[in-house]
Figure 1 (cartoon, rainbow, N blue to C red):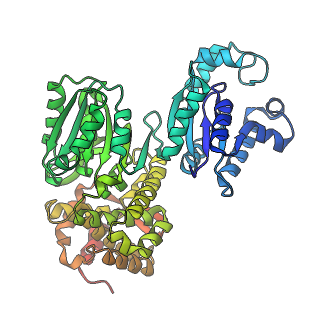
Figure 2: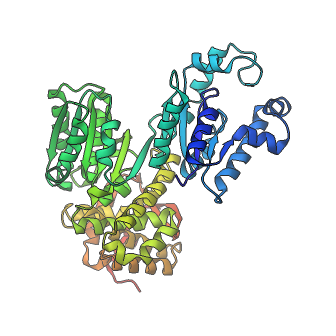
Figure 3: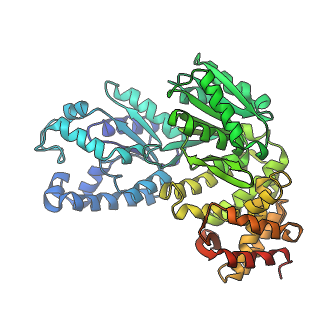
Length: 531
């Protein structure tokens, strides 16, 4: 519980009551944000509303919460927020990143009953309480959905609510803000055994999708977790590897669901690497126009990359991920105990995605991997967990700002334009995805240097780190000319322009739209040895 706990939700849901109970139990400071504002401005919240209106109050509220999130001294506090404290999305995303946010929920009738009309609730005064509460809940539904967890309070004793909130705080998950499809990514050991059953609760049927390598290793853990609920279960075991990432595999899942009598309350569980989770998510997005799915990634690559963002899909001939949909999971369990069985080549190649993520948004992660390269390669459990958490946190921040890759999210493709093309040119077999990304990063840094954006020192530093991690960086050994032709199939192409990601420094990247002819001209020079 190193991050503050923020209790959000409509007024009169018991945030202050539950917050005080939790603070007493955990020996943490309790802060009522409204009271903190009153102490600072020297007048009541009602007086602030009367003097400056709601807009003026929100300014004071933002100032107080921003200051609180910036504090690093002392134990993390329990904070009861006002009902509208997280309405501004930029502030809400900052809260999700820097704290654990739990929304307390209550029905409009219960809110009206608790609040009354005594003049102490400015936004209810003078209105029919229940209708006004219903209107406010509807208006703020997206803001309240973007949280690490949501707890219903109607008819539930405050002590019980506090227990449920405490469990969410202790899990310290990473929140992925995606409106009503928001979810949490949990990172830790033995999460499948401890959490999967609870997350699948309420499903009419659970279909586990895995592959022929992972199933024998970890399938029993998944079935034990689901079987404890007495849940109807089915398996679909796919062939392992990228060559099985096609619509035929998705059809197998559709048919298994159909023959099992699955309905819209069914849940799919994707147990495997990124190929399995991508296919599972796509099948879930399209069966009966959408059912729930839970990700249980078993590889480092799937944990740091495919676990966040809801990109699902399959390859179409040589076009990687050409058919798919954005369909967020309802939860993701990054159980690092499962990763320990991944073959070494897969683990090492996935470190390219960690390096990429560090370049995009976490300079400290880049320093960590450099400093601890020996322990990283040895798969030190603590370091694996730290790399996974930090990588997911970067991606979650970016996805929260751009869920469907309309702009900013494209920075996550650093190294992927050339990397995907090389992967396809190798028939999706000779190179792992991570090895292709390593080569793609090398190419992107060289192209950025040619464009005058990437410092030579950054390119040399990154390539040296990739070499140290045992990843390929020698483009002269690759069929670059053939790969250049495949760039025309890249999803980031728009007409004759290709969106390219350029790195200017750790944590500093930008997007450049380059004519395809220019990309091809620059890329052809990649087969030579750099100066």
